[in-house]
Amino acid sequence: MAKKKKVDPLTGEALVKKVRELGNLSREEKARACGYYTVTRNGVERVNMMKFLNALIDAEGIALDSIANGHGRGGRSASYRISVQSNGNLLIGSAYTKKMGLKPGDEFEVTLGRKHIHLKQISGSDEVDEEP
Image (cartoon, rainbow, N blue to C red):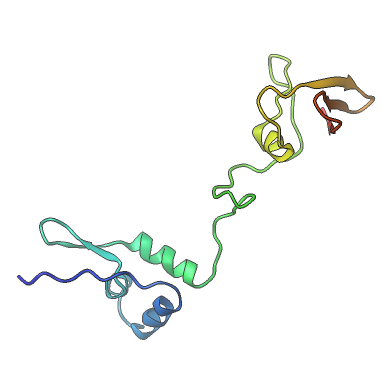
């Protein structure tokens, strides 16, 4: 059996154009024709549908993933609300500390207001208000 030369999968506008040309074929046949397959050691072709569909989504300009601050995975976003834990502590999560540019070891002076907890960074003059 003659060995097929593996071609780079199509991306962008070339991918969209090719998929439209192959209109009546199945998804698997379209993915294979666009180069989204691998050949196993036994010579069996396996279609990589996830890579194909993700490339097609990207080529169409559809953004499914949220990107927080341009750092890839978003995770949970800050709700600006915290609650008292069962041990009585208030935990300020990493979303807040990253946004404020805080580093391990930064110290704060805590003062209680009527409806706020004021955190004043000791090493600087920044003041942060957190609601309980």
